[in-house]
Length: 255
Image (cartoon, rainbow, N blue to C red):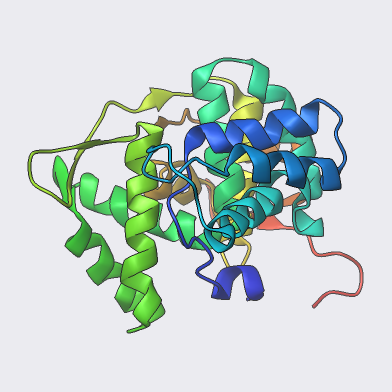
């Protein structure tokens, strides 16, 4: 487990349009310094709630750091994933949502874990409450003061991204119809992102395709051979008759 998996990281709601802004500044060819300044200017009066009001320097800096860590200056292990994700930003709303979801989950595994707990609850019921999600996360992270508060930021982000719907009851959310993802290359990228969000960096193909962290999406069946041919950083290990384990390849010198 590295620092990405230990950190909670998401200290405020992250708007979908902020993710788009960061990614498109990168696609426009701006360097990291210029993108950082552009994001500071862009977020100077944009609150996580969507209200237009002047933000504190500290709050704005937190948001800019998160966006930079996802798209512009990611952890070196995520650079190839980031580069492969960028072309999907011109392929429609579902593909864009999938790559933003995958990149933020890989860069900030806490997002992925909040999504997983939310998805597990939504598999059993049509609505989910913030209390239910927080209770499950505390079982994973322990009674850390920031867990419930930061989980609330993430779940609010889900609503802002349009993958959950607010209900009349505060802190209660309705699930929506998930978006089908038919591009197998994109699905392969999403599964690699999930492996980066998992401390062990491995998981069975079946469990990854049905991972509740991907609750906003419908993923198709596919083979480990297909994934192994397209994602050079994933190793496919077969065991039993039909079971396949996907594992991130370790760099030379890693244990």
